[in-house]
Length: 165
Image 1 (tube, rainbow, N blue to C red):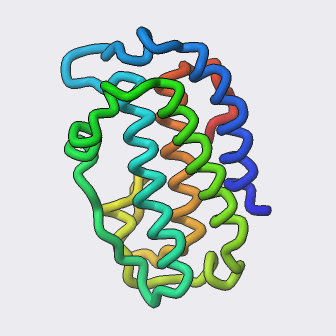
Image 2 (cartoon, rainbow, N blue to C red; image 1 turned 30 degrees about the vertical axis):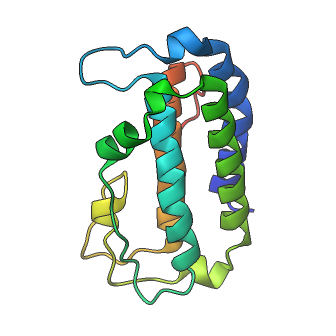
């Protein structure tokens, strides 16, 4: 199994109890003006899972890795994550990411590692990708896990995982 799939599954299992321990009241608190609450961050991660699910599936047969982006703030606002029950958001996040781990693990090596000269990972990825450098679906999958870890650590703090990439 790919190292990032193992990391994703470990992240989910270690984060669930810590996230649920935050509780309804604290999960709704925004740390400052214009900042997302934990509910909104988990909502954003659900949106990220949804968008990347399509990318991971379509990317296996694609001749290029060109994918539509989305307006993160608008998606969070429209779906009203701030008003959603915390435990339901955590459960949806965990289950969706378990499914994504399955999709990632099932992707054939040739599909994951095929080099694509044309891609827009520099626009949709979390970490910087050089548009002139070839990219792979593996790169996008690894980036997805790093993005998830960043946001979970944002909620739970640096002590959550000291080995976050």
